[in-house]
Amino acid sequence: MMNEGKEWGFDWFECLFGVVLLLAAVLMFFHPTGSAAALAVIFAIVALVAGVKSIWVYRKLSQEIGYRSFTMLIGGAIEILLALLFLFKIHAGIFTIGILFAVWILVYSICQLIVVDHVRKFNGGIFWTSLIFDLITLFLGFFLLLDPNLAAKVLAVIIGIVLLVAGINMIMLAFVHRL
Image (cartoon, rainbow, N blue to C red; front, top):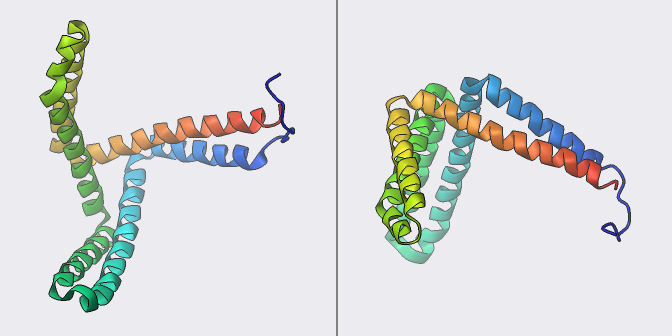
């Protein structure tokens, strides 16, 4: 018998969290621009906290390592400036996130293209399939780089897919816990 432990009963918290994730996924799918803006605001908040932390660390490090700690002050100031830019110019945040996403796809595909030849010695068919997929990914990366706003929306949809899958999984787990 699989269930040798104590019965948990229906897990309402798991179920409710799963529903919240499903609702967030739906929002991501139907409002990708708003979702991209939300990502920009989240990034801004993280950058602001990181900037304040860097300046705080600078104050402590300056006593320990001297002038080299100045890099923490500069980094913190840049992080705070980026945070303020993203908070007050949301479009700039969306644009930047789109560029970063497109560059990430480009870097990934270029790295894959550089090393794909090792697959040939294992399986020629998989090598060609992988090479084609890497070239498609490279093309998509360039395409997204040409339109960073679209790239940010695509990222929002990908996050929506992750939220959808996680939400469904949590709702299933809520029912499993009662078995």
